[in-house]
Length: 244
Image 1 (spheres, one colour):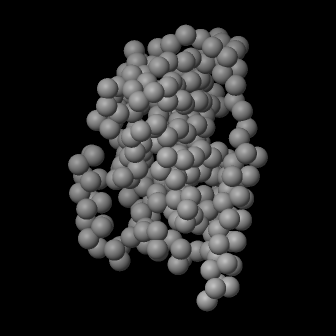
Image 2 (cartoon, rainbow, N blue to C red; image 1 turned 120 degrees about the vertical axis):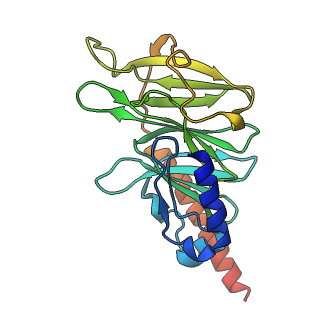
Image 3 (cartoon, rainbow, N blue to C red; image 1 turned 90 degrees about the vertical axis):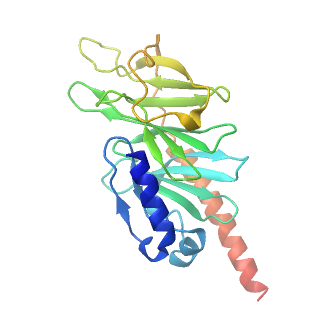
């Protein structure tokens, strides 16, 4: 599946006319990747590069690379759209769609990777979700959890180059009165995260102690981040027009 996606991307780069509005569905191993347009195409197509993500729900920054990732929700939907933007030009680099609401994101401290945690309660029994790893240079988004239901991922933190701290809801709430307030935490270690394969995290990898698992609301902070970026972009646009 990964090799097929790489071949598709190579074809896409060779045929720029196909980039606008193209959608590819790579079930199972790869997240849905939407419209991999260039920065110049983004600027010419819309005055607001953040419009495609909807209402900002979560935002994280990578100061080292000058990137910001924003998860957003559209009307009557949850936060399933993620955009990765260049801070300097406010141009979108990648736009992805998750099967589940995105609850957590974390840029790798040194490698061109973005970890994304998603998931929700199914309304009756299970906490389903995914741990996704986006390769920022290629756009490949791998789903790492082996089990077909995955786990609802609530928090992510890179402790160093090799260790990723993952906070998850319990697998289900069967006879578990605290399942919606508590969860499990693990530290997943990999020598090289760029070499991690899809569906490679087993139940043993995700077995960890029970801990409090708050579900904080990051909407206001995310909106403030996007508003600041929009305001900066508007000021630069007006300044550049004034010098013409």
